[in-house]
Length: 298
Image: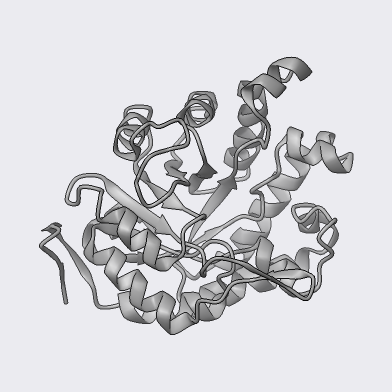
């Protein structure tokens, strides 16, 4: 699959959540979810296969927190390469002969710049180690997601070794389209493009309606934009977070996000193969056009 070429021709459906789905299916909250790529590979492959069957054209590896900082909480800081390479192999297995793009998921380190300095952590090296493992394992895309500030995203992008991988850079921010630092999202996305990202956008934090509002503030017709909203705002019920947005409602919002310029649309926290299946159906006949006022044909 040539993802960039496909995005020029159509609206592409991404996959949905991995972490919240694993928790919903009984994995204890205190367990390292990324480690399951090594200890329970069949469970991870099965989820990837469900998303592919639902219509996802891009699937993400189970590696969001597979960096040395986050893995150190479980005593697994020396497993970065093993976990990331195993995760890529599992996604590749699910994508085999399906023409589906495999994206290596990379989240933020989960610490502030001050904490990194106090602990003597080289953030550049942390990102370089994870990205290098995913590239070596032959992913198609490096997928930076859920970053809250441009500083950390810039470190991650600059730490990325040169390769043929497409780079996606997604931030999480409120519908007002400003990062926590106050930087306008539009400025952050433009700077990511300058640093090599081919696809930019937003994920997590917002429910589908708020993501529509966010994309109303972004210019269409220029950057290749991606949106991965949550399935609503979580409600803590019976010991776990429950996300209320039904698949049909989520899919309706996905179409509205496409109308506002997004070319790659998937789901973040709380989304399931059912959500992706609904999105895939509403996107299947859509084609992008150059202006937000007449964004879709088909």
